[in-house]
Image (cartoon, rainbow, N blue to C red; front, side, top):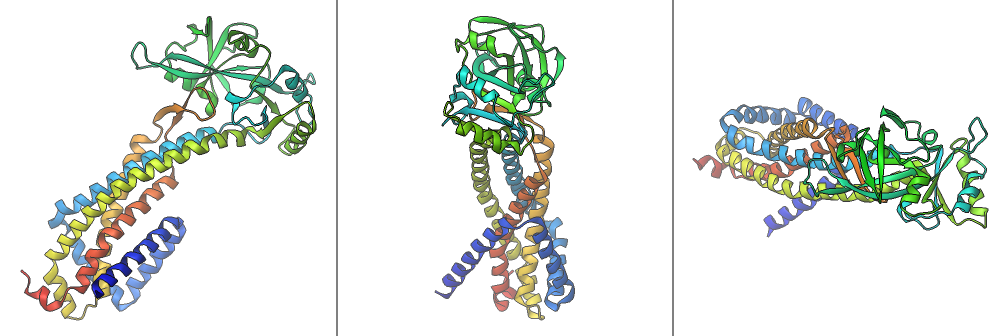
Length: 439
């Protein structure tokens, strides 16, 4: 009964410790490591723990096979976890980089995204004259009524009938002024009133026939691709054309899905929003483009993170059992050695710390290897998925950030802690007389 209660207490402490551990920032972990190192250098039990640890580490060469099981298992967990989280980070960062605090997007009231929004021509004219909008040298408001539609195009590397969805954006004359980071990198810009297109570099990588000089079919019309642009954000995955021509092709008349407006500055957002809310002719929602696109990333980013943690947790369970098996075997093989140390005056705490340190060092090595592999293989890797709130696929690159590598290392050390704790406790609680009799 006492053994059961002891194990239950250890399990409860372990759960609390792991919960606290995953919340710790790097500087808190560094502080803990410094305090622990001082304890090992100054206290008698700490020096005993250091001695026992050095003996255990010196025997790793004789246990290379079993030790490598721990390292490889944890490296696999960290590598997969970081890769999956890097996918979500890349997707989220692409959308977070889209827009700015001094650019507004106006949608029909109650619309969750551009796809579900419709604004009439009269509403657009009223919006463009609202206070707070910046004006160009000709005193024209820097605003663009835009329309987004979906088109199916052949996917590069797929079968002949393998098609994907791309978002086509019909833009106004001020679209380039609203997005100063969008630059033509090949060919030229489209001419207003013509069936001409410029394509984002992300869309060009995904779909066939999007090189300047080629023709593609949108709706029932044939269009000429005349240029390629790069913006470094979600717009890279789009195709742009003249708003009037796109609307005519898809029979949308004079309506638009959204209005983008350049504000005089970020502080003008409140004035602009209040003016539109007070106008009885309008029923619209207003937000900054930065906030709008950031919101579009939240749902998918959460899904990707949950998927990564779920897969990582399943793999972590396997790695923990591997570590438990390895360390129980190591403790059994060193039972007489540990008992001898206990007999000559070494207490249980140094023994527990030594076994734990040995396991944690193996886990740290596995975490470093897994993080390095994830960075070498996946950082900058291009992928695409159907973007929330849009009609097409969003191209993005995996981002293996220092924060994700740190999270992977924390997972590795947590696995090592769990995998080493119970073998360490067994080593410390093993009766000396029993251990000395074991062969």
